[in-house]
Image (cartoon, rainbow, N blue to C red):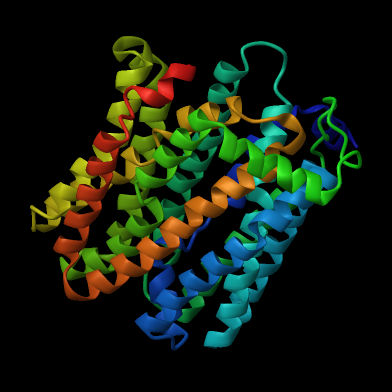
Length: 399
């Protein structure tokens, strides 16, 4: 009862940090491809699972965002975590391609439920004050929770999966399922925002129309969204490609996991120092550096070809891909209307997923022929769009 009372009194920001931690404590993430191969899937089939996830997420993005604005942000997040929890237990027992395809489709729907609603719930729950600064602080805390679990999970997972056997894979997946279950239970204690939007005042058509109008009529928002999408640092693509790339250089399974842990630790340390970096360089220069730096990492991947170098480059590059998130999230939310915030965020996420989905397929095909060319193209794209979109100027006129 005491624990129940404590959870009931927690702020949404604190609860979101806890939920983020447990929902992302994946003890098998660093060897996910190897597990699926153990289950009999080919690399082509494994690649298609990512496409299924993205397609289902795209199809569900706007409907789930509309639903979030109608039934409430809290319950959309709860539904998302329930789907994620069910998916993890299914993942533990599934042993064929179509089962994993179903899990990927469910995961996409779950991501769609959470993508707009979670951020909107967090923003609308902020105390009175400078919403831009408060959102950046809240997003940093949330990102730090993600990075801490990304540090812990591969370390423990590397010990659990000391050999590539099905039994050890399943132990890691079971621990992950238990952790996600904890996140789902914690999400039940979220409190719906008391702000002056009301879920039943607007029809779904009106909510959708408001979100679309904001994107099409706000040039500042359009430019910020373009920066969000076109300078994406391809974190997910890197996480998928580094495993086979490390195998190419004979990196052991233990170090595949520990490299991810070290990268997450570095990312956490960088995130904790971002306010000082922004104060030292100024927000405009700091944000420009955050967008540009991952491209330099990918270009380094394309240049160096020894084991120690690729491990070090991966650690630095992966860590740098998280840095721009808090700033760009605050920039976007500053432009949105609270009545349709979740819907508009979902529409933006849909556009972002479309770009990532297309480029993930392109990079996957390219990597079959040459990892180095793939990383080279990734670096050129990020660098080029950062320059073309003037990320150090236009977006920050609203800061």
